[in-house]
Image (cartoon, rainbow, N blue to C red; front, side, top):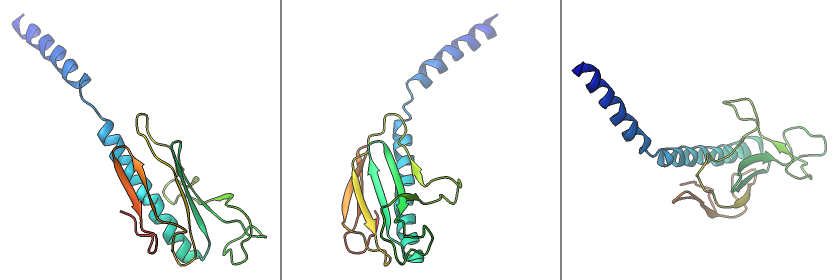
Length: 142
């Protein structure tokens, strides 16, 4: 009987402790790393393909897209269109885009990498309490 009472007390105690466990710092850090990887991928793709690549970051998430050319093919040496073609995420096979988890706030930043991997502008975007910075000349992300 005493063993059953102890097990019940431990169960109640563990429920109380785990309900207080806050996972938001882990969700924020995970999305921060995911967004950094997407920005770095955009720069590398721009360099390898010679195409202009746009990174669009907003509170709703991020999207990485390449400038459309007249024929809709890569390499986009004659690219004249907008950024309507989403890059493919090599890990998932779907569009290279993502949304922040619940409770993670994200700022706004839109910029383009040219074929040399240089961003159209540098800047910083807030992800939770931290920031992701893109250097204006080199495109270095930290």
